[in-house]
Length: 159
Image 1 (cartoon, helix red, strand yellow):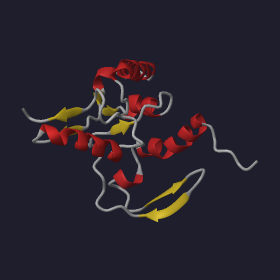
Image 2 (tube, helix red, strand yellow):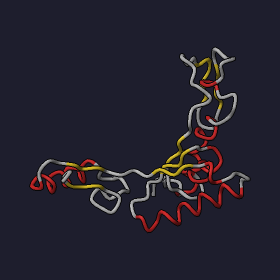
Image 3 (tube, one colour):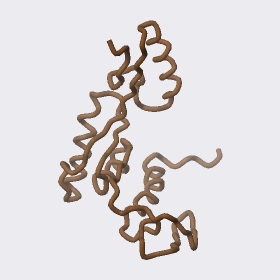
Image 4 (cartoon, one colour):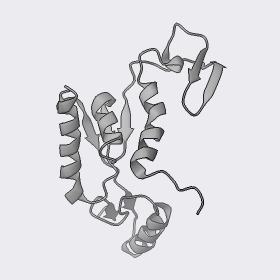
């Protein structure tokens, strides 16, 4: 049997490393004192990178994702806004509770973190166009966790 993909926990941890690095106060693209910067990591190495214009350090940080032990912990530590991919409202309360728990363990006030949730809006001018637009929205959003015709969607006519 060929090589097996790493389990989800390992893969999520590896994928989160560059994100964690970007929150460091002297991260190259955001450090106004550096014209160039280099990154040396476990899987890649770059030298003499230049980013112009520099990114602002006071921008809002939005972290999205629902992996409880990785993305949500990063959001609890660094984010101003956490964007959930929860498609069912029944799951939202649990995920917000997990986010609050991470924030408390990290010594952060969870009220500092705003929660956002994607919502698909399908608005048409005629009732006869609603179903075709819903079907089109489902094709476009296929593969996303949110249900494009479910309880987090706004569908219909203005009337």
